[in-house]
Length: 404
Image (cartoon, rainbow, N blue to C red):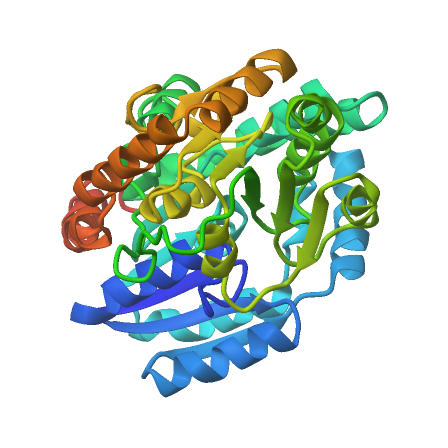
């Protein structure tokens, strides 16, 4: 089968959450099918990634993404009552690249709702939309956290993007989400649209436990650090949780590991015990050194790769409800869940004061991801979804009314 895969970013290298998932999707589809990739390029790293994909045998087309131009394109949509996202990621050139290739394509596979816009004109093809998470719900969460006027803009985007997501989802032959919770929201907000849950995995061979280099009372957070939920979570932790821990254990350290730290994140390094690394070649080095992984996210959906990777390394994880809700394990058995500064402080303090229990929690975490988040098991459904989409396309076209 010839598959055209559309992505907001070049799906390689797999060094951030969305790229980990898109690369795994491409790799799985590529085992049985001929996959061509069309993606926005956000700079030299994406162009280098495209070269690597071509070396691996994937035909890859990149379209330069210009953030400022996207904002200009989005502005008129504010007056027309349309989702700004569709302007930010709108592109006549990318649409032309898609249109040029559909004649030799059997399946269109899109990742993220903004890429779905480029699929809508092609009703005659089988189409699968991987939402990952409902972006409209993310804007709702942003609106609840930010003051006016941002809250007004975010709330507006929630409503307008949800309208688009409804149109998009109902046009697709199948829709994919990462967690049962996301699917529940999807079914409530977008009834009469087919949806399947395909959970993320983790590279169990790459992320292996190691006790040899653990440093007592060292906490770690991993993630791209220009992403609002990560910024909000780290600021919350440094300002409201870490000082309380350091009152009891002055040597508690906190390392923020991730590329593109904003000035607000960089400023956190001025606080006692806080290190901000910026980009690192291998996040495992910092996970091996840490004794606890924290995920203090107050805005989150989907499965957090940061939590799965830490669990795979045998690290005990303390996360908020938002950060752990996509993982089907149990609090107290596979990780600890705590919300609010007081509860989060108490949960981390418990692990700091009970070293053997912390280690046992890490061992149970590793066993859990081995059983539930192996990529091979998680993505076995992708093959069936691709084939079923062709069947549904044929049924849909046979039922469609004849046009004059």
